Image 1: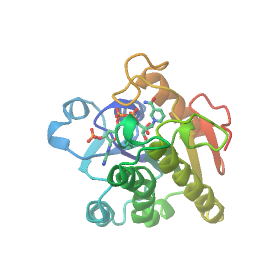
Image 2: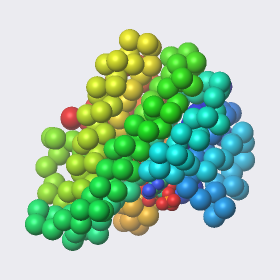
Image 3: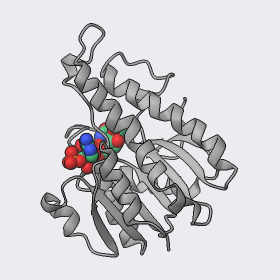
Length: 225
Ligand SMILES: NC(=O)c1ccc[n+]([C@@H]2O[C@H](COP(=O)([O-])OP(=O)(O)OC[C@H]3O[C@@H](n4cnc5c(N)ncnc54)[C@H](OP(=O)(O)O)[C@@H]3O)[C@@H](O)[C@H]2O)c1
């Protein structure tokens, strides 16, 4: 069974990833900002270790790395993400620059921070996998003029991970990106297409089948870059 580290596990897709991986018998290191209020996470059964981690904070992520020193991590799922400024403050003509920077901090640099902090843990595992939950909004081939801060932050993490895949692939570490679909979470809203469980289940299959790098949809189809 694998050791799986997941960020953003208190709700939404991350909560269901945690539940499903744990139910399958894996050890899950479940990271979230506020464990004290993560009641649904704390109620899950299985081999789940909850860690307080803010992916947007250097010191917090560095502390996670120190805490896990010497622990092999087979699968890292960078799931935590935020939509950024209010919809009407990330358009062609409006700019909440602080909010835009924070979207980059969480959605782009967050996964990079966590990956860098855990690199030795991933290297210590056999054929480790790094999956980042991105969005179709980050694809150059998806032309939806909305949520400009969110879209560009996801495009940037796509590029970073595509480059990282070239280097880490030589060490046998797979690096991928996945669009989780439009999901019924706080981010996706109640009218979205997929339940968090459907999305998480698909993502787990994508990770299981991942060899090398790529950009996929939750259902296993390749996603355009
Ligand atoms: N839902 C969709 O339709 C959809 C579509 C495309 C992509 N995605 C992506 O899927 C992933 C999961 O999203 P979701 O739909 O499950 O959304 P969600 O229910 O809103 O959950 C987002 C998770 O990210 C965490 N997070 C947000 N801002 C953070 C920050 N500054 N620092 C640390 N953690 C932070 C949240 O923690 P807190 O509760 O502490 O804020 C929560 O655990 C995200 O990367 C998102 O961009 C979602």
